[in-house]
Amino acid sequence: MSPIVRSATEPVEPTLGVGRISKSESEQADFVVVANRLPVQHSVSQGNDEWRPSPGGLVSALTAVLQNHDGLWIGWLGGSEHGEPPMDYEGIRLRAVAISPEEYADFYLGFSNATLWPLYHDAIRAPTFHRHWWHTYQDINMRYASAAAESVAEGGTVWIHDYQLQLVPNMLRTLRPDVRIGFFLHIPFPPSELFMQLPWRKEILTGLLGADLIGFQVPHMASNFSRIARRLLGATGTDSVLTYAGRTIRIGAFPITVDTAQITSLAADPKIRERAREIRRDLGNPEVVLLGVDRLDYTKGIQQRIRAINELYADGTLSGGTHVMVQVAVPSRESDAHYDLERHNLEQVVSEMNGDHGLVGSPVIHYLHQNLPFEELLALYLAADVMLVTPFRDGMNLVAKEYVACRTELTGKLVLSEFAGAASELRGAFMVNPHDLDGIKEAVCLALKAGPKEAKARMSRMRRKTMRRDVFDWAQSFLAALQQGNASRPSAGAESPDPST
Ligand code: GDG
Image 1 (cartoon, rainbow, N blue to C red):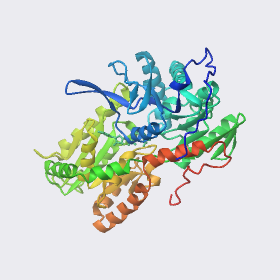
Image 2: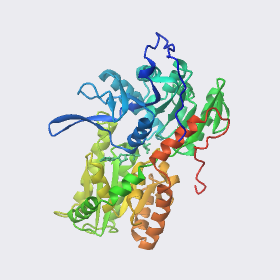
Image 3: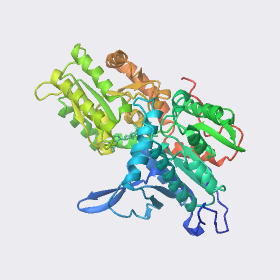
Image 4: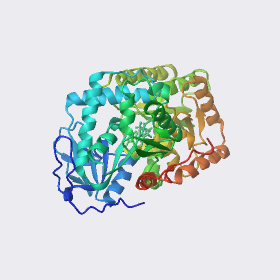
């Protein structure tokens, strides 16, 4: 990876708008990550209060980069009532941004998750627009930007993440014109027909264009952004390089992925393999285990998928005892009414399916509304013959890639929505339009009918693609592209569209 370069020798005192930054250089970091949340969460284990790393590949990947560069992570504590987080975690400095419960309601539940989240996911639920949410979104974005401006050393690098912080790049650029700024959007960037609904569309675009490099999950999301920036703001250039306000901004696709080495090593762990066998025994040793694993979110298409499976039981294609489904729905955004309703409706569909087709001691669907340890999730992936990933829209979908990464024996079949970013890489999956109930049923039937030879060919194809690069390569390719400066061509780290798509 290119070094995160810094040659500062002088103390830095850039203007912060209302005052002067007074941090001494020694407190500043060459590399700063800004994300909605800090990478640690509070937990109580055997009566002891402790801070642990938040699970997930993103935290591991960025932790490694931050450790190598004496880095600092800025984020919110996630409503913890357990006081101050550690100042330092595993060699990474942490800086918490304070958000009050009222601000959380307007910034996080409101503008982030009831305006932007549905709008950016094909408006599957109607986005809600409130001016007071927008004002709080601006205020909180400025808080993150100010924290970053204070924390980054002269000429340093700041990597900002995701839809909650889209104004931070330009705010930070104004406060600290000397730093290099990257932004990565983890969720889809919508087509202009949808984005145009946003009353603050120009402000969001201007916010993002403060970055030197803007990364998206797949090329068409990058194109969506570039086109709308040209149309609405008069930016000039191509889908991969824009000129705006006298600056050059590079745009690219950097498909995120998983920690493949960790997953393959855990998948070989005898304890996890035994647990997978135990899960099958506990399910009654059925011929086929079907699995869904999702955050409980209306974008993930969980109900639609279960309805399709229910119809397959109803028409006799599937039968209780022979085919069993497991659905893990991880609790998410529980204080939001849309999510509450989604849970309610999902649980109704699950209980109808068991009511109609289950047997005493042998339900057809096992539903877990729980956050499971990652090892248990892997045991489930290993136990599953058919993995169902059917979001209506998804930036990438790491569950699909985790399933593929752990199927080292080239068994198992993946049914995948064509609207997940992962679909452009996992071409060996049984593809579905998640809105098409009959289409989901057909794909499940094809997956069930496919023999070991076809399954192996499909899984090999997906594994070749998935094992080629891991989440560390992802972080490095983004940062290498960011270090390239104002090149007037697409970054080498940016992926070109998959020729097979
Ligand atoms: C956003 C974008 C994009 C799930 N259940 C448990 C658990 N998980 C882990 C999975 C996986 C992650 O959560 C879910 O990632 P996804 O990518 O599927 O979905 P989002 O949460 O919506 O993520 C998405 C992603 O950001 C990254 O850029 O791919 O498109 O929406 O890693 O393993 N982990 C544990 N217990 C569970 O019960 N420990």
